[in-house]
Image 1 (cartoon, rainbow, N blue to C red):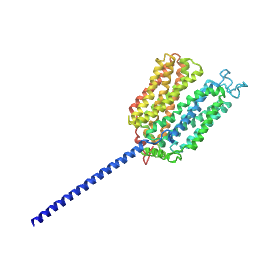
Image 2: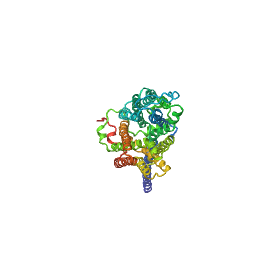
Image 3: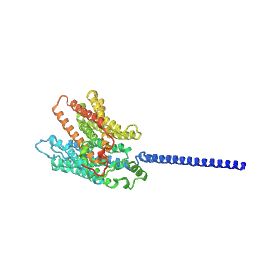
Image 4: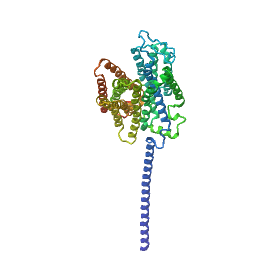
Length: 514
């Protein structure tokens, strides 16, 4: 009996031990499953994040998005060529030896009458002709920016480029009928160019992954810097060999051809593009999932925008950037003639060098800004402040060197190139900062900041002309110091108040108010 009880007791203990062991085994298995599940979820989350922010195996240069950037670069080269070429052809178009009483009279030289017709336009009329295109660009900025959120970008950019090119083709004919028609032609052409320049930047809301925004924007906009370089290099040759009307025919025909290709090849959304690879499409769409959607603009929060300090400092820096860029671009040939006393051919070659280096620095700035953001080297707001500082501070520094350290020919050329070209570093700063703080209203706000910037450019051109005409002793010292002061004041405010996150008034809501 005792033996039976003993065996029963041992069996019960063994059963209890097995039960506990099984219980702990199940518990451990459950914990392991939970840990495995958690690790798996974390792994999936990491993979999703990597798919969103890392291009991985997605191609760069052999891709549709970079093809669009190169296409826009070519469009901007043509736009600037159509805008700037008159300033050089004017030398061949105007006969300064004729009496000014005979307005718009063509010379009667039999050999050159058709190839190079010459007109008797006063310097005042020439100045109005050259500046008239800027008034067209200025007027169209805000309407184009607002309408870019409502109408098709493909149609707006395509038709604007086409019409700008057609009015370029018509300019030699307009010159035959009088200077008034030339001015009207230039103003209308400026209207369409303003539309193209503003609306093209809205494309990147749907096409540029956040980590590639800087390089894609800089690459496309760098055509605005490369265009003047090309014009300065080839326009003189075309005028000498084919006649100045062929300059307008060539650039106008190139613009028409590009507009036709634009209608055929461009698609507004990566999802609709028939030639894009699935890998690139998935990369772009996944990278933009967290971006604020650019829905149709019905109402714009004007009051909130007017109270936005980050928007104000961006506008202020745009004013300073356009001021210095316009002054350095327009008056480089005059300063070279004043300082170095070279002939026209050498002047044209030297004047083209700053534009070439400005194009290189613009592409470099966009690439560097994206690299810093991809590697988390700096925060986004620090990146914007860094490149804005370089774009405003370096031209000021090299302008001082140009005034006080350019004792030789080569020193003058080097400092002049650096003063004009280093402003392109702003491509990684204020030029795209609006997209950081208000992607939903980017087109409209880009139009506003462009208007403020172009106003700075017009004021700079006017003030520089007044100082040069009234001050015979040290005009260039005053002009450069005024530009430097403008840059420094704007930069100080930007460093204090600039932001790089989406503002509250720019976030998408059900009800948007005025």
